Image (spheres, rainbow over the protein chains, first blue to last red):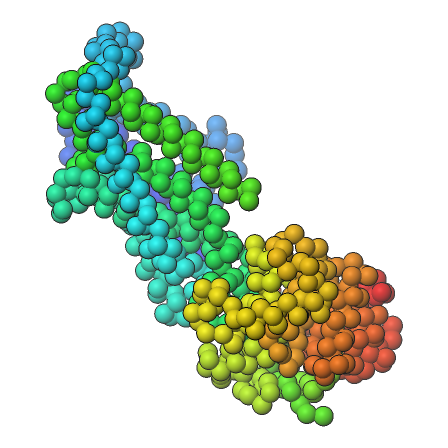
Length: 334
Length: 255
Ligand SMILES: Nc1ncnc2c1ncn2[C@@H]1O[C@H](COP(=O)(O)OP(=O)(O)OP(=O)(O)O)[C@@H](O)[C@H]1O
Ligand SMILES: [Mg+2]
């Protein structure tokens, strides 16, 4: 009981600290933008912490409200300090965002003619470089395919060890589960583009770097998807197979695998679809293929060449989309 | 009569804190047809699963066929388990696979790892599986996926799967609770036949007194994780039944 209360109080203080430091930071940013007043980061933090502490102690804060310590009880938000503070916070965030992103509707509507060159390129693509483009495109498609194919067996095996319901609740079981889950989560949160930068330095610019990048990201992503699927299986079947005297591995093969094949296939095809898209982007940062070609042509301002590349990418993505939707539909109905 | 299952002071407390079994002392003899009675939540499923350690007991001892179950290592445990056929309320078949493959999975405790992994079944095993399917009257359904079978048929496939183990005993956890009365009786009949003709020991949880009287040789009733009655089915009159199932139970559950 008491522990619960202390935990809530601590969380409310943390929330207030974050909000308050952020809010003072926004004010300081606006003061700098509008009045040229530059404020040291240290002061922002000090003032923010002070404001948060005062707010939290008196009970007039968002954190206190969120965790049920508000001094203002259950009054409707229009009659409370935290309510208006929240409104000011949202407006401030919007204003600061507008300035940082340099939003400028005038440019959007009045400078359209600047896009003329590229639009012109798209509508009169240079078919002369078609064969070169197709070669680059083949690189992209194959690298996406290999990345997916190599990722499948690794993710498949890992996913069993990352499934809560299959790992015994022993020290070893919990450790294996936690390590695989954590690594998969970290690797997945690193974008494929970042992996491509790493591998383009490691093995050199080209499709191989792109393949490795997509593979690592796919292993992590598929491990998570697969293992969640395993956690959803019917446990009764597992029990029944265990009861026959089957070993753990036999139980996985007989009770788990038949239940997960078709969702696994669906996820895998979906992943290949994503990988084909990502393969283009990865090309931009050293992963080879059509993305690299696009980057080169764009930098040389050859808009008619860019045009043909854009059409080809669109065609591939569109085709993949249709195929993957069809296959997944088939799997669902089988 | 030879004792085949023994428990001493068996306790189970789940991680959630529920104390589901509170000191079960039980001796079951070869050839008995035991009916487990008790309200929902009284611990019937927990008891059955603690006997072959599908659920780990918290304390106490279990002896099956003169072997210490609680302290058995994984290999020993598998050898004990394969002598116990198990049948469940939800059938627990592999729904995407054929009846034949499901029945063959009953042999997993005997076959080598690689044969099992490759789904490469010995000719003898396939013939035996077909014979067992025939025995439960389902030979023409061998190639059919079990998800397309009716509940009663699925439960018979499950019985055929158990028979593949050449079990010394059968544990059945509410095997007929999802079936209509006529189908229920036909499924119970198969268990009755195994009990009579092959002297197979059966431990079966049920909610129906009529089935208990028809098939059981002994009734064990649980309430709140303790044994509150242990005797012959005929001894259970209305008063006994109410003391097991509570005052309001009447005969609602009796068929
Ligand atoms: N996996 C579990 N985790 C925590 N508590 C559980 C678990 N399984 C069962 N219990 C609890 O243990 C007690 C006994 O449950 P059990 O399933 O053995 O009863 P039962 O007699 O089989 O009931 P039913 O007739 O509904 O099948 C119940 O209070 C139940 O809530
Ligand atoms: Mg139960």
